[in-house]
Image (cartoon, rainbow, N blue to C red):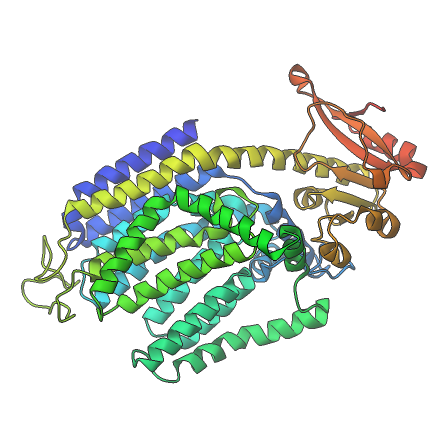
Amino acid sequence: MIATGVVVALWVGLAVLLVAVWHRLSDHRGWRLVTLAVTVVASLAHQLAYGTVPDEAHVGFRYARNIADGYGPVFNPGEPVEGYTDFAWIVLLALVRAITGAEVEPVAVTLGIVCALGCVLVAYVLTGRILRWSGRAPAFAVAAAVVTAATGALAAYGPSGLATPLFVLLVLTLVYTLVTGHIVLAGLVASLAVMTRLDGVVVAVVACVWLVIAAVRGRMPRPSPAVYVAGAAVLLVPWAAWRMTYYGDSVPTAVVARLVRASDSLVGRFEAGWTYVTDFALTYQAFLLVAAVTIGLLSYRRRLPGATYAWLLLALALAETAYAIAIGGGTLPAWELLAAVPVLLTVAAASGFALAGTPADGSAPAGGPNTTSEGAAPGGAGAGQVPTGRGVAVVAVVLAGLSLTLGMTRTLPAMQELRTVEDQLDEIGDWLGERLTGGTVVSAVPAGALAAAAGPQLYVVDPSGTTDAHLARNPGDHAYVVRDRMPAVVVDAAGGYLPSRTCRIRTEYAGPYEVVPFRRAGGEATGGRWVELYLHRPQADLLTERLTADPRFTAKPC
């Protein structure tokens, strides 16, 4: 509650500051720096209010820890299964751990926050670069940074430990390299985006298509697309060759598992994806309205210098949305899969609104004794330009306020509930890791947080498919788990602790396993906290004895 109050207070102060100094932002660098500094602080507080590390992040943590500790890029030592799609993020975490010896989770959280703050600053720099291309006032760039900092999806996943903030940062950086004409660097950044998240492929392809169109129209040098592809190939070709050699699969196991789980039919997958995107659109409808107005302005005022970059941003946002529909949407709250979309729309809108006010001949204001170093008349707009009145600042404040309010009232409770479950899974994993002998096979759903807490000494199997090639293609094949993986302990704790014991056991495990409920000390006032384990019958007594050696857990046989 206190954290929420601090966030609201900071954002109210930032809103007042933005409106009050709006006319000075165009020609006073000091006020821009002050406003940006307050924006960064507000963004940091916004992220810390969420502070949730989901189970999916722990899968990457385990891979990173195993790389740094010498086991290689595996979930279980000796089992090369590509249960991730964020290779670049995992390698970054492993590198930091190998150099410093630090634990992976705090490193991931810190780097995620830094990347999210980087998104705020790159949104400012990118918007400013597009506007400087057309001689526009930089106040719009500050507005873009403020709205980006208020975006709930980005803030929620800044401290999540996922690759999401790094991916958004790479997408913005890719556009910036294209704006500045560094095509080889753009290819390298695109390849990093591909290696950071699967939809990086979509981003890289859209950027390449844009380059082809720009080259055909004479806006980019003719060789630009080929140079871009060559730059991307520098990293992608050796990476693809390595993963094919190491894992032996053309498609990552994590991707196969996701597609199989998404739906039994293509139509069903699209329906799920459409529902996901529709829910997102209803929440961010103000952003979509502003984007629609931007499209109308850019369509009406064609051939504006720099407008092609606004179209690129809009195309990337549309491509990300189409990707979400195609794969059936996401499973995490706060629309993690679409975290880049509000940011892209924000920069596109800020750039588009400013560009739409340039003179009819598309010329930028010339520098002179009455213009600032940014190319804008002090205290106002140049001839023929959209006036940078406080109305623009008010629109930015309203967008930021709506995003913040929806985040605090809708997203934050969902993330807090997720945090509670993850804390409980961490506790269960720590318990199993301490009490079970090395080499014990454990089946767990979900596997990420539990496996990360248990450590590499336990072999963890996820029946949903992220840790086993067969289960990726046949998720939920518990008969295979019993017959081929033969776990000593089976954990089904997707929702964390149970409020009471049930003594239920899945049919596939009923013969070779027996269910043993364990009561966690504390929580008696609410009926207690329970976790039910399926223990392999020949080892059940020994396993129960070892597990109850922890004073926090007491076995209560059925």
